[in-house]
Image (tube, rainbow, N blue to C red; front, side):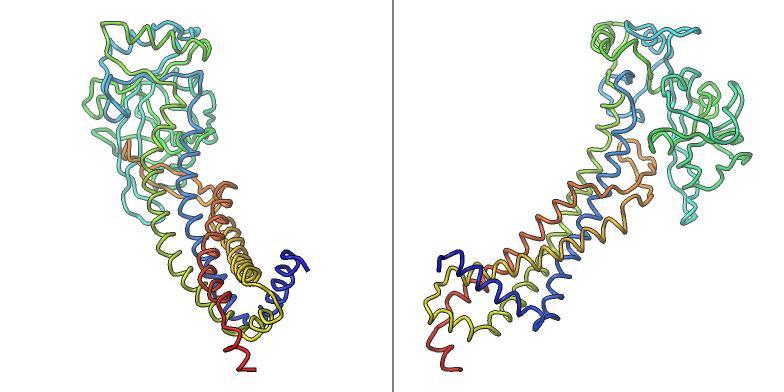
Length: 394
């Protein structure tokens, strides 16, 4: 009988004894399941937030900020600069001129529906071309705001997460009273987390004369470099030019790093406990089978097949736990709506948890690693069982 045959024989024999140790085996498997479920659930926050921001924006749109700014909140642009940007090379020309929107971005406090506590909500003042630049905006209730009037439209995610945003609601923001006249949907949760109004009405309400960004629609994505080079070389303005989609993708980096680090730390701490649980389970299994192992060794079976059989059992238990944990995380968290702060703009963003296939694979890899660590020492001990001592117990 070859080495592989002997290994398979011992492994099958040992696996058939799992029902005799069902309680300890289930405890080890569910310990691994808990680690995988928590890790995948926490990391799905990062995946969902990143997906929300990466789905926002278009390669055919450009965003212009003040030079040195990393977000709209830290940028300021005078009116003259916004006109120069709108007249830049490659900007699409519409019936009413350049398809460009100079915008002002402020943070307002609104109570969350779930807790009643105030949270930061982005209020964006836009120009009429904003609806053409973000071609995915659709009014689903009410109507658009009218230029020159104190009217607001709310994104569907904002209306769902925050109080006071139903059509017809009155709000006191800045130094003005506002009326919510519509609700809009978009292809991204980020846009749906915002409130929109006329920028020319927003600025006086907050005593502002400067803009923070300019969004433009290009004639084609290929003209971005031409547009960027022309503006950065213009001595009249000092600006930072980015593709819209790349800007929003960069906004997810900080939160993703925080959540990934936290998820890894929590999983590592829980994983230590799960590994010790697996070690105890496999030590118990080895002790219960010491006579069988000694008998096999006396019949000429080497230590290698014994080591492999113990590791295979540990890996299978861990894999089962990993599958349970991954499925549990998917069923419990995939698509779950939540709101978190965007650390670049310090405003709330509504997003959905994303339990992706990549996260599930990572969870299974972690479970197998825990199974390997949990079974290694017991496997070595099994291979070193003294044949003479074990046989005396027969």
